[in-house]
Image (cartoon, rainbow, N blue to C red; front, side):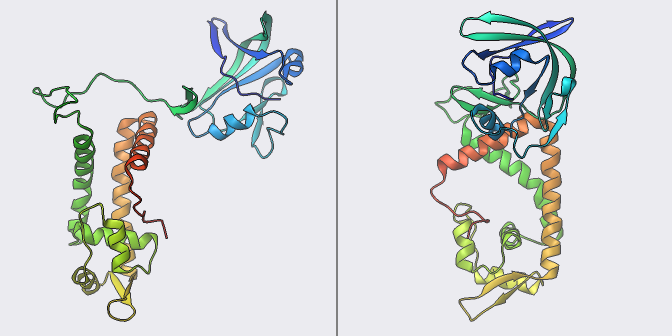
Length: 289
């Protein structure tokens, strides 16, 4: 038996004790009232599907899951932010609920950010720090162009990150646009100039026949097809160079995310995806047909 509960609280540190409550109308009530042990799982940020699975009634909630065995034979789920194995200590009447108090007999945790449910939807937790000011003259005024302006923050973050990657492009005598062409071909080959420009329309970069010709001369790509309808493909050298640069980009990303910490890294990616979703006029992604 398993349920998704949001009525969990700590009770005592010495001995370590926790409590949660279950509705009297729950089909699982008899199983929990007669059990001498239970386990509490603090779900990780990517386990919202698991939360939904255990919130449903009537289905086999454990189907297809990897399980471990805990105290008293209680099943333990994997991949969670934290797990507490508990011995049932007390049960109390709580109106239309039964309150279960358990003594924690074993506990383990990971560094995974926890799943949060707030205002009727799932959310991601992030650390709240002091307000950052980048300059002494900074004005915290949303009505003016200041360092609190979202466009400035997004642009500066992009340019600071990309300037580090550009040193790797320069080692291979590549321009930004040439690298964009190579990286998009790494995702899917056989693209036309028009296809490139559809994907670059929001970047200010333009792919031309002259640029493609330069990459051919460098031995990084080849074209196939009649004039005006050529499709571009990476050469073996082009693939190797592109993979080397992308590996450098991933290393830069890993260093930056490590400084943020896993919680903030998850929150950052989530917010950027939402920003893209809400501002996207329907532009194609490199992974789209």
